[in-house]
Image (tube, rainbow, N blue to C red; front, side, top):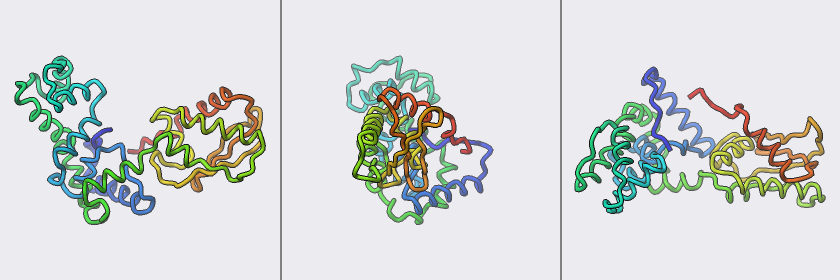
Length: 265
């Protein structure tokens, strides 16, 4: 999870426009950019002073790499003897410090580091977003409401599998096999591929639909491929696969294309 990206060529007017796009997505489709940290989102809604240390550190841990996160968690838990000083020094160096503080001050230094990375550095962007977002989203008033929305919108294998519903309850053996392959495939995906699959079916990498309707066709040969209709969250699925490996390879090929890359922002 990252803090808000920083593009120096974006002016105040342009960042305010991005904030209005953010609001439009939330008001119309109840979605938020969950790749941004909860601390950043809350500060955009209620100001930097609304972010307490608990939310700040939780957001910072998500922002770090796995190795960095493990080291910082040991500090926060008070296990100072288990700290790998080299890993911590790499983190402090990346954040602009060239030496480690003493052990009695290291926790406070990490809190300052988190505040700088997630709130101070993107402060200009936070202020621009705040001018567009403040009071426009009354349900995002507290840390609890924002974390609840994050939890509800974050896709998991189980949630996405439960969304998949065949359009017809009475399936023939070929259709049932294809549906079984699809559910098996969804349950096997890592988080990144799961978000790509969800975006393929619904147009969004966060949960914004109640279900994904599955219909079936009998395409075969070179014309065989799954077809998604994102406006209605409908997935047309061929029922002509002879095995799960064939199904997986074909869907992997579809989802591995760069057509899902959004590089406008």
